[in-house]
Image 1: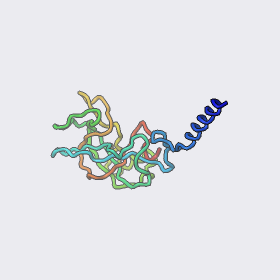
Image 2 (image 1 turned 180 degrees about the vertical axis):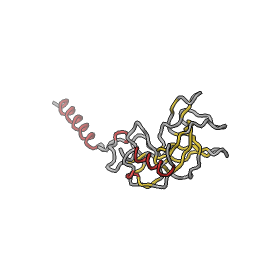
Image 3 (image 1 turned 30 degrees about the vertical axis):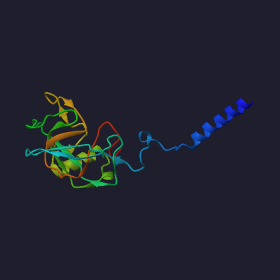
Length: 179
């Protein structure tokens, strides 16, 4: 009888302990916010006098769920791929590829106005002309003939303001303002 009571008390204690544990989801299990978020990038480096800039993810970037509420107002990072060769001093790799073109930023727009990739691309065309589109997470290229696609950042021609975040897109995750 005593053994049965002890087992019952142990079982009851374990159940009570579980009931006291917080029920909040861990970050990996967190439900998406009611307000959509978009992924943002920033300037990571300026080329040494060659008119290039490296843009990409930093510690604030979340390419899986987005890091900035779509209610924020930021420029769109635009890219025009021209097929330009890699400038001297840049060695493209998976994490810092060469985008084969030029980047520019639109005036700031509220993320929720970017209701689709098409809308974002059209904004780039509106400001810079045909051939421009929203920059994408995987635009960096590397390899002997730039045949491979990388991610996280890329180099391109252009000048962008430092200490600024930009809306950028990712094609294989729900981290865009329109998702």
